Length: 203
Image (cartoon, rainbow, N blue to C red; front, side, top):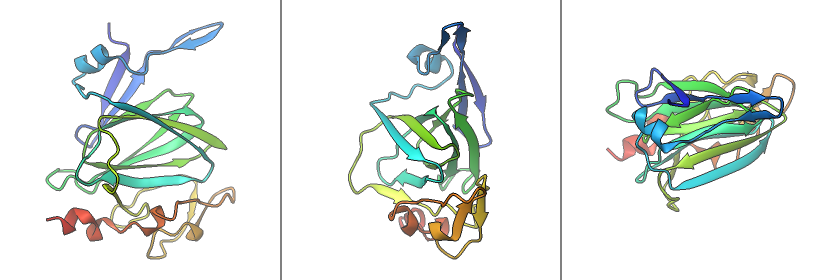
């Protein structure tokens, strides 16, 4: 019997995966990845690497993608809470340019299966969060691409963020509702809008 529940989203191939949680007086046990269960759900992806990051509240990572070596990912928050976002950047997809957001937390145990061809990012909502993800290809230096997290054409509704689009993905223009500054890496503050990205330059 499968130990996961799989829910489709409006973006083809993007799946919400919820493991069965076995609880008792000691705590809980869960299988976050079981090759057989995933295969039965139609996910035959072979993962080759596990990654993890730790971030504090207000950190926004993304939106990232790989240009020539796209990666499928299985993502979750092992500690804390994040708002996880994907954007469909597959040019021939009926949902091209659309986004999906999902709360992932240590309490809801929810995961997202992100297929190749989607840009990905997340915002930390808790005081601290640890984010874990499996990938199906190794890192290729120089292959990174990115899209502005606040691209008005995409219109992602990030929770708990206050600010107005200044014409660039500038962290200083935003803050959390409790006053926590928004934090982006220097690289993420240079990402273009989708319409100006490598996706169209490569046509």
